[in-house]
Amino acid sequence: MSTRRKFLKNSLAATAGVGLVGTACAETSQTTVVRSNKPKALSTWVHGIEANEEAMRVMAEGGNALDGAEKGVMVVEADPKGSSVGLGGLPDRDGNVTLDACIMDHEGNAGSVCFLQNIKHPIAVARKVMEETPHVMLAGEGAKRFALAQGFAEENLLTESSKKAWEEWLKSAEYNPIINVENHDTIGLICQDTQGNLSGSCTTSGLAYKMHGRVGDSPIIGAGLFVDNDYGAAVATGMGELMMKTLGSFLVVELIRQGAAAQEACEDAIQRIVDKLDYKSFQVGYLAMDIAGNTGAYAIHPGFNYAEMVDGKNELIDAKSYLNG
Ligand code: SD4
Image (cartoon, rainbow, N blue to C red; front, side):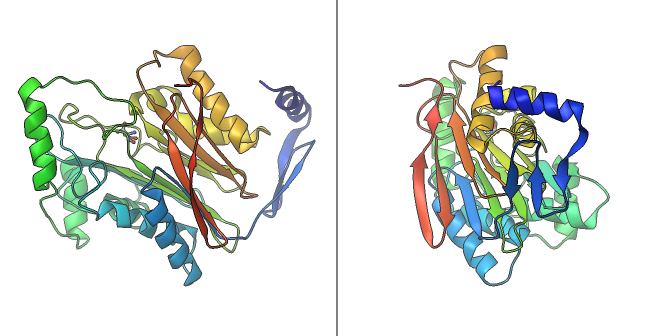
């Protein structure tokens, strides 16, 4: 833990109640973080470029951060060429495309679906769960039934090329998730709107050739995504089991709440995995933004990149990593 945070932790403990003043800024005993009201989009991997583009367009037209977070990732869900999200996602070992997604807004509302089949936009279903039900998460058949009742169409999501890749995989049927390749491309998106509010989304077809019924971190609030509009937001990508065991996205935001910079929080959350779990053959990447619009990104292995868009500039950036090469 950094000296600064040790100091903050001690002083926060000594002055319980210090933490938030109004809604305009989060205050620690040492720093005051001023909320930005400049629209911004931050998302995982190269497909984040198009997700950011759409999110910023939606927010420029009057949508809020939640609209941006939902609509941005829907572009990626609908792209049949992407083999890790929505339509065209690589299937489980039995040939079924099963989808996980969650969404969280600036008021702490959250919705999620997991193990959902034959619905192209799980993120939009997750938003409906958040807005139309008293629950946070719907799974499998129940999630699908709910989606159909909400007017979503049932469709085949297994494209010819994903089917071919699966048939090729079946020849050896060896399950060996490869770092940064094909099965680690979840889209997680954090948006900040003109009100300075934060929302986030996360959607994936999960690990390719996983066991039927396997659910990853992406639909789990606190693992794949967490938003605390008083402090910051975080999303995760990679081998979901590692984020689930450490509740990684919550941890990143909690560290920001305790005074860490977004970058330091991502690094500490990766360190938590390194300290506790068998991490060497798996990739995990965290991406975070605080209410001032400061961003952070960190991964276990090199290769994780993310897209950041602000002031009309949309950039793909390589994240730093714990291991190098
Ligand atoms: C999962 N975290 O299902 C997801 C996979 C992923 O980038 O992130 N891919 O474990």
